Amino acid sequence: MTIDSDRTLVAEPPVADPVPAAVPELDATPPLLLPPPVDSPDAPPRRRFGALPSLVSRPGLVLAVLVVTLAVAWCFVPGLFTSKDPYLPDSTAILVGPSAEHLFGTDRLGRDIYSRTVHGAVITLSATLLAVAIAFVIGTALGAIAGFVGGAVELVIMRVVDVLLSVPGLLLTMVVVSALGYGTINVAIAVGVSAVANFARVMRAEVLRVVQADYIEAAASIGTPRLTILTHHVLPNSLSSVVSLVPLQFGASILAIAALGFLGFGAPPPEPEWGLLVSEGRDLLAVAPWIALLPGFVILAVVLSSNRISRELQRDGGIR
Image (cartoon, rainbow, N blue to C red):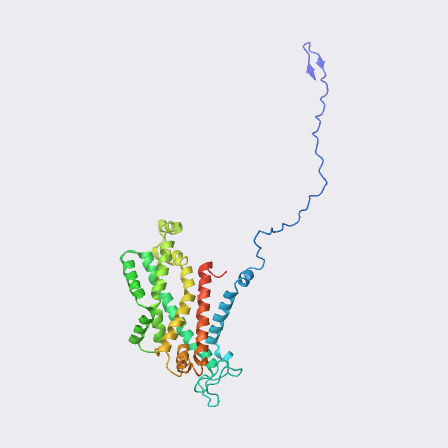
């Protein structure tokens, strides 16, 4: 209703309702289901079983792990693999070749070589583990201190390391054994001391790389104690390369301990130490070569397997 100029009420025409906008009709056609993507021939195959394809593609690594595992099992439970006494002579089986009863043959006293090799793992591998532990602990500590502290401390430590590296390893171990006295424990200590320099150099290089990271500078800028930075940030991020060096040093220590046992610096007869077993058969190579060759083959297999594991660790940065 409006008021005209002459004060007359005039009705307004009705206002039409707005036309609603057209609502698009929903498409009732179901969406097209595409088949699952298929890998192209050039695409790399997908991993569906975790680490299994990686292990299958590296049978050498699997064999190396099995060999080292078997040697360690000999060390801990030798009676599970042989029931013969490694010290008991048998006059009816002197210099008998390898057979079903004597897998590695017998020696000049009729003792079973396989049994002596299995029980000798207790002596050789125990000394090897002690040597690697000494080298790892001392070398890692010296390398970490030298790389983190720097200055005169680093200079002194690295000059000592250079002196150790300048002396041949076998000669250095013989000097240490001569000073300490003969015996398996002294041989292990000597081998461990000679390997300290290797761990120290690797650890120092890793620490120098890690301390340049941004998170180390950030931790120092907020007032974190230096000892806390070393133990909580530097060491955990520097041990990967040092740990991968352990299997390599394990094999090298077996060779060194066996060599010292061969030369007469290790366990005395009639102990079945691996190096001593090879030494006992060197005079009978023409008559009974199995006495020296089969224990030597065991040493070779364990050392090569340790080197293979170390190479895989260095390539992958850890076991995948």
